[in-house]
Image 1 (cartoon, one colour):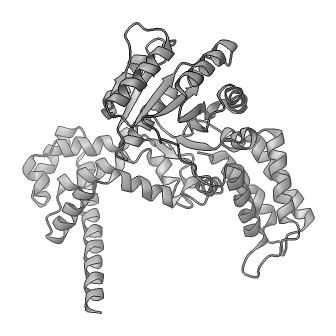
Image 2 (cartoon, rainbow, N blue to C red):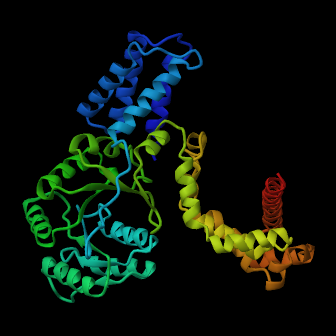
Image 3 (cartoon, rainbow, N blue to C red):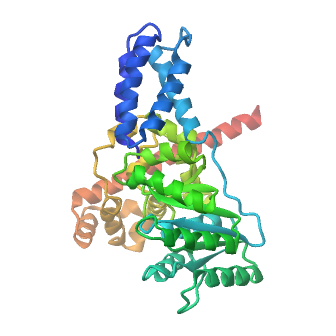
Length: 440
């Protein structure tokens, strides 16, 4: 996400390296490079110019503290302005209603249907009873796609076989959902390949008919400035409440995320960064600014970890570690929890300084865990519970059964042992600290 923009901005700030103070000359030179970086990221010329003008106004004459270098001060100013441009604060969706209705709109291919499923899972995890309404009666197989996604996350879908009027489907879904005690109805609407009058009339009629509590416009980040144009058109039609940007993990330059709020005035509420149903994040402007400037995003990383980790299972793991009973079954369960967190490359980029390091590294999530899973499944239940019993002949058998090598089996067992030792030290340290506090 934003790798190219991050790299270009980093080079821009190097102009100030070694400078004793911020001056009009070195600021102008730095911002010239910043403007080019933004334009290359597909930010509109007007937005890029306005952004640089605001940074210049803040930077000129800024007194640099003794402990802060001009380069660091400029990074701080750009960070603050990026945050401001993208909306300052995270914006929640409004799901107050009986039931609340969330209207999902956008062009074909933008990821509306997939987002509808992701949003349903996001709300379900918060303990909210949610139903999906299959109202895309225009695109072939759209209803089947929504049902497939809903089956994965175990959320019901309302549809009417053979009904071509999406408004009838939506109204019936809201009525039935309300009667059955659902708190939120997510209405997945039809799109077109491009903005046209038929689509605008249809989405306007749907909006007026269902009177949504929240209307969200879904846009594909890879469409660049076209995303901004379609955002304006949909806003004219339904005056939506917020924007969802999808495919931020793809070959995107990030211009849509930087431009949409500045152009439409509407907040970005969610970003989607992968195909998995868990790959949906609330949009936090400050955190995105951190990532653009190569500072990582540790807060989001911790939040993802908290969502993926089963607290009950974690308590059991602590007990096992304390009794020295942590085995390969527990290790395997932890690996599965890491997989739930999302794309490894995206997770690594959230660690400060790691974004640049993994930029050109091709990481296949499934491939990365494939050999580990094959080795684990080639072990007997006894071996998983008693890894110390895995001797040379057992290792050869496990390698042959998993289609891997003895070296790979040895590597996995070494990783397991290292993980067990580190976790044991963490648990022992925590217990020692608690004992010390108790005695104190």
